[in-house]
Image (cartoon, rainbow over all chains, first blue to last red; front, side, top):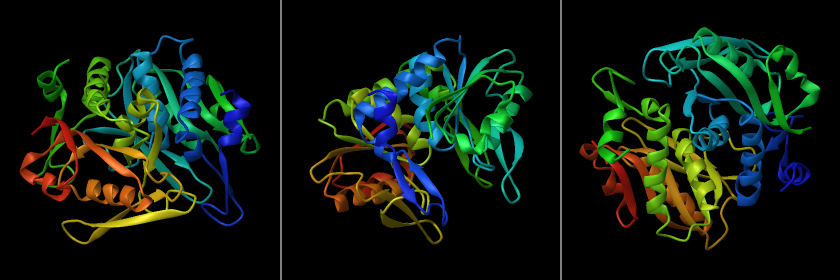
Length: 173
Length: 173
């Protein structure tokens, strides 16, 4: 499938997670083998422009694309998770939400100094989580070579928060 | 890597998530490309004994194995998630915990009647979540042909809850 076909297979769900929001539901893409395969392939193509040691997936939809891409790149897969989920020693990064703040964590020993890291998530919205993930990689001494998303919600201007980072998004809304 | 080598690369973390529990931490396996590749390959080998339409991954570590396996089988990937996370109409299944209950959800249109389904999670502990996932597939009219796990904690006897199901686990503790 090409990008236009992938775009069409993503379902709009009205009023989720709250009234007035139109949610881009990727489960309709995931359940269609050729659509899932094409989106992995197209994201992979971008990742292959770099030498990659680790692929970092952001919990939890980032795992769905991050894990197969790590495997295909022959890179390690690193889960970035919500607070309290990773069992060993972690490094944490806090980011701002519309109201309040949230945090994500990475294992302290997940990334070696100098590791070239691709960060993967399904959706670039306000960019807060991805920015925090880049900061985690920096703190570990790794190098974020690419931040890749399946979908970008352009009207939220998440790229502003990722200024200076190498950002790739497959499907724009 | 063979199963013994995979077993060794899984890290014990003391007192997680609470005092007295030794947690099997798979992040040390995931970050090692050859270990991640071997575990996917060995799970895949078991899945390939069946004709598979959908691979169902249980949130969130089940996504890490379920997504690459779905992709390699050329099957659809179906996320089973905690309540309130899936945007469209869902079917829910409740299961018992040590204290109280918990639920998981699947999209109502995720599985077609007659679909052959593999259920994947990282860990078979008490079996409650996997049993609930099997029940969700039944409710959708699908056929759970295999329930596959990376790790089984044998002393918790989770297989008792999955009686009558086709269960495969790669690494026993």
